[in-house]
Length: 320
Image 1 (spheres, one colour):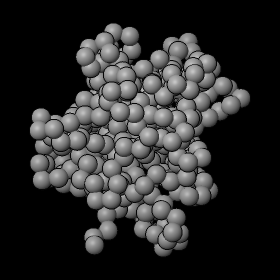
Image 2: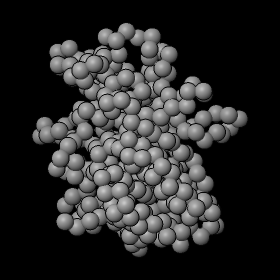
Image 3: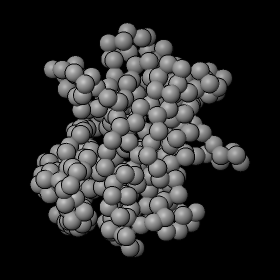
């Protein structure tokens, strides 16, 4: 088995640090990026030896604009482009900036902190940090809304099938499309709902995590709108690695949505179903309680929604 420097198909872990960075203008970011590629490989190899049972991984994704700035390979991955806002009748998925995304995961939070420290020492002189989220596993893999997150995730060999680019784009075979959203939840409004109404919003029963039948499940439930197929009726899936985060003193309770996919069009179709609705107007009920935001404060305290699209090169080699 050939060991790749980024293990994106590993299962979610107990602790995660997510961070987004934007290159500073007129900085020596290309040389720093080369050092980051080497560091990511070093960290992943090192923790295989140091914590063999810990499932530690460090994953770096490159944004579309950064790919161009860095002079990465051309032509680009077939479905790689800047994310464009999706404007629904009630909610909009708004796009914001981000050049580099880090996804650090480990059983022990201290390992995540150690990796972040090594990475930040290198990247900080040439880039500004836009987002940093510390995620944690809640009970039996539930989101902060109380439902198990990622039940429909592919398992076993299907993880590579749905997460990694294949023969349809040979130059980038083994790479992946990374998409992230940071959600804040209105917990008070959510908890004011009855358990039955919460279950209808998800399309699952809360305690058992069993999916409702199509006859019972509302068409605007999250599971109904994010379960999609191709023209031949085959399931289209993404590999999610979501984790909850919280700052109780500030009343912040959220989910960092993160997924890997062999095609960005799969993720895009799910987002269109959520925000535009299927049919149009039948938007995802979860959006009444969940808003994509950033921690970046702009324009006199307004927060801007954060939605980002990145590509994972299978070995993070600088190719140009």
